[in-house]
Length: 285
Image 1 (cartoon, rainbow, N blue to C red):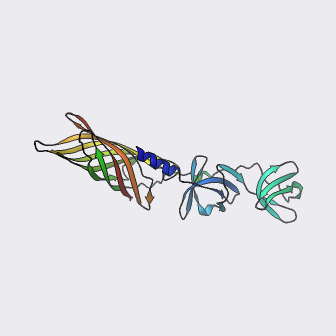
Image 2 (image 1 turned 60 degrees about the vertical axis):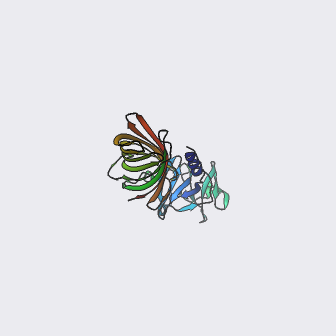
Image 3 (image 1 turned 135 degrees about the horizontal axis):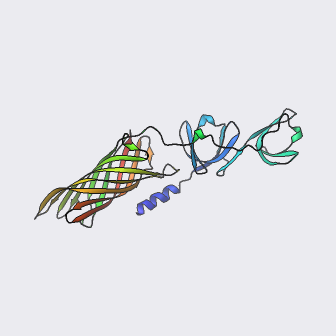
């Protein structure tokens, strides 16, 4: 459990950039940058996530600090031909106080040419930018190693295996998968266990892409082979799987997983519980 606390504290402490983004319409927002690539920004604003093409923005100001604020830059055309662009800080019946790039400026309404700007306009995100999970499903294949312990077997195992999560076996957020794991317990007696298990996986994600967790529940069968100086035994027993882990590190199509897991094996004498930590790496296809 301590490893989970370390992981969560580490990634919660990673700063998320706060910036100002401005659209050509003048609508501006103080947002948190979650991630970016060559074409888009992924941002968080008032607990909502948006994906915005860089070409859709007029500018982005890394020096503006703040969070979850919105306002509109307005154009003020004066009768002398000059133009001032800024945010209305204050308005009364005869003048505006504008926050511009040059500082605060007072503009008389009588000095403006044409219609007065709409200062009641409120900035809002276009719904088309609302973030949703990619529609293209991914197949995931991975390998892992683990160490398992049990009160019934007084030694730590050397374990490893592989898993497969086909893209066509996904419903809503639930992913169906298959896991093959081999455990070897070497002591005065030898336990060798081959687990074949099917599971459902549910993602637990947060705005920061590094905070990507999952939970698995499943079952199957375990082929147990036991050898000692006095007894040999082998058999096929039913088993179940509980696992929760973190998979926030990603690089291109590669990703890693760290998890805490429990496997229960039903034998005639009762249930054998195997508990351990798993480390793995996978690829998204």
